[in-house]
Image (cartoon, rainbow, N blue to C red):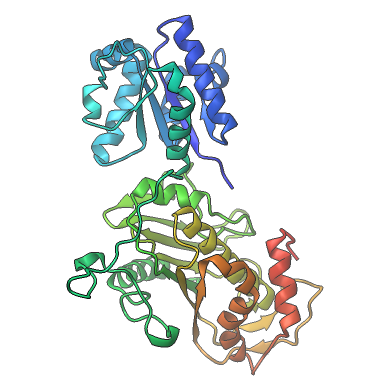
Length: 423
């Protein structure tokens, strides 16, 4: 799980102030937070302005240690603090409601003031040394996205007997039936699907792909930075691009915020040394709906094939990602997770194996696509994972001349992948 990255912006007011900032940074690192601090990470001969720019732009959160001198330098545009102000201001203008920047009050002469360009942002007050431990925990929880007090779900109006307005709790149909249109066939999913389909059509050599739709019955409303942090902490390291890859070091591929959430598109024209292409598109809405369209990994190895073991691994990865994502977003363990997987471009492909350990008689696909769905419980996803993977993939394998695999095969591949065994 990737640690959140935090950049510390401060003014070198005095030796005591620098020592206090160093202690704060050290204590945060002890809390599992990857702190970037000039006294650790800036070396002789390094471009200082580039260090500040990359540090701020690449960080998940930025701590602004608002001493009286810091505020004065920021507003006057003086020194390194003044340069950092330019970078911060650009991001604030681009997204006025961003929560990336956290003002920290220290040596502020009781003015309780943050730089004017930051507006009326909520700060954390570290002026009282006696309250340091309490404030440190408050700050660490904020950075990790683990509040001490979570907002409870909205209940029903006791006077009408019906959910209130647009904040209605998402529920399944009778007897746990699959979701109505408000879940996996909502307008949001339709818009993201259309955008992804337009993108992959530009890669004419790609004839097949996997589409993943995931929703949850837990009501939530998250900011873009909360969504991005949750995705980063939910990534599963595997072959090829992982589900919801975040390539923040490449401007054209990194995730972007938009009104309904965040999205990313990674469209590769030619993989290194192969001349082949790949396409990945994913989006996560503020209410926790997740969409993915991903070209088939098999096309980079053996075009016109389907590796049954690769498909089992990919679906396992999808469920593991969803489990980690919703836990990071604070969903209830009792919430139902709804998953739909669609494989397209199956017709004419040969079903085979990626591993020499598992032989399967080659069979040709007779259907153009396969769609399957499961409803599972967030708190028990690990226990039911093998069975869920089987339910999601059996309909597709059937299109290859009624191909079936035993429960032992699914269990071996799924549990092996969970343990990090790529086999």
